[in-house]
Image (cartoon, rainbow, N blue to C red; front, side, top):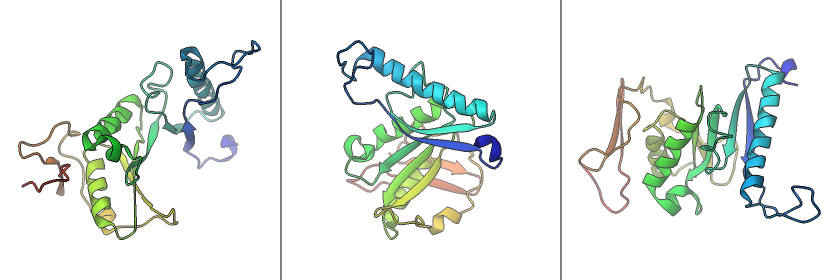
Length: 208
């Protein structure tokens, strides 16, 4: 299929996650729990065989996956994906920013960048309404603290996704490296050739 579609550069694999089903994975007549370390390892390895097969069909194929956070740094997966989709970093009740806070979310983002290989197509996804400019700007500015891509998904799943004025801003190229610490004021900032991006991760107070 890939060989007959020369315009296809990327393949996206969703739910590259533990199976979460107890079954007779070893085919010995009894069920084994899905949390068994050797079964989890074999599951990861199986995904990699699948991705390698796709690359054999088209050597230039890049693989991006919505991969389990605990998997990306493992021996089987680390360095084997060309990117990662970080679903709903912000905007859902179960989003990592909601449950773990901004710093935890950014650690997840940086780890995804570190565990993938070129072109490192890591997508920082956020969810909000077409008029929720505050969430969109907070999310976009957070994504710009590193070198991933940004996507903003409508809360109701409507297509096409909302287009915001900021998406057309010509920021230019990054002057600063990806940011790993806040300014002394508590603000996170990153300079670009045509602008400056600022994030206040503190939801309880304003910062200057």
